[in-house]
Image (cartoon, rainbow, N blue to C red; front, side):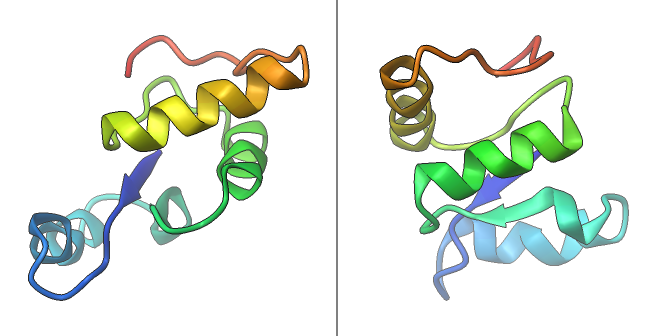
Length: 77
């Protein structure tokens, strides 16, 4: 799962097109979405790894922790 910043001029914006040539577009998620939406994608796709910014990962970890939940199957951040 790739959580990217799609703002024009961002590094992620530049690599998103390249990622789409090799990765299912549903696995590329905008970073501006709420942690609840990111958690829903994690449950749906159950990825082995997540690529994102530390701040996004922190927000997601807090979201799971406050609900007493864990992130399913993730092995690498």
